[in-house]
Length: 170
Ligand code: SF4
Ligand code: SF4
Ligand code: SF4
Image (tube, rainbow, N blue to C red; front, side):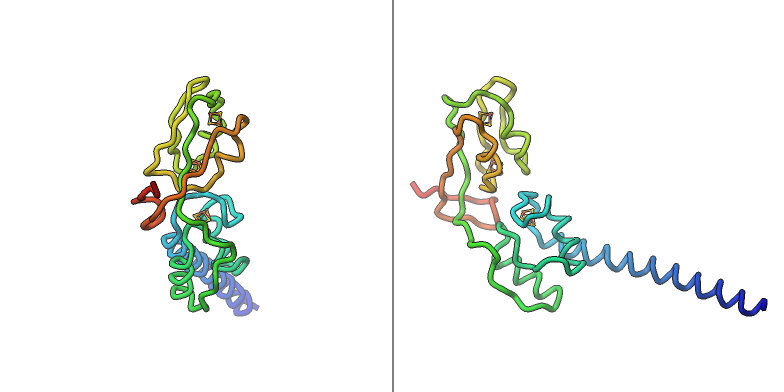
């Protein structure tokens, strides 16, 4: 009887260690996936940010081709990391873009500031707002919330590594 009890305790301890080990392994995979994502937190993958998307990929809940800003480069890197086949992006790739605010029309409601993932809109309540172009990822989240429709898209000629270096068309 005592041996049976000891055996059950030993199995329980082993299961506990195995669970902890697997959790650590899973966290490590999530971090590796997350490191490959652009970190714009734009939500265009239908998850609230890069880390939740990384977790969903690690859990096998979603495909690796849903990151819009990451495009084919990120899909390829994720495929290599996870030993999967690289697929075409789930959504059509946007050409590089940023947004500009028509400061004459802006009513200073601050709604755009509240949704901008890289925090690149400057302004205060009832004061005009402006976009710091070098940090804008062109995610368009601010456009949807603007009540006076004063935010416009500007297409760019070239964009290296998401939004770090940009060259305007004109
Ligand atoms: S679409 Fe890409 S960059 Fe945007 S939140 Fe999802 S993983 Fe991050
Ligand atoms: S498009 Fe708008 S919300 Fe997105 S990064 Fe640029 S300013 Fe921010
Ligand atoms: S949401 Fe539109 S009106 Fe409101 S602060 Fe931003 S740009 Fe101005």
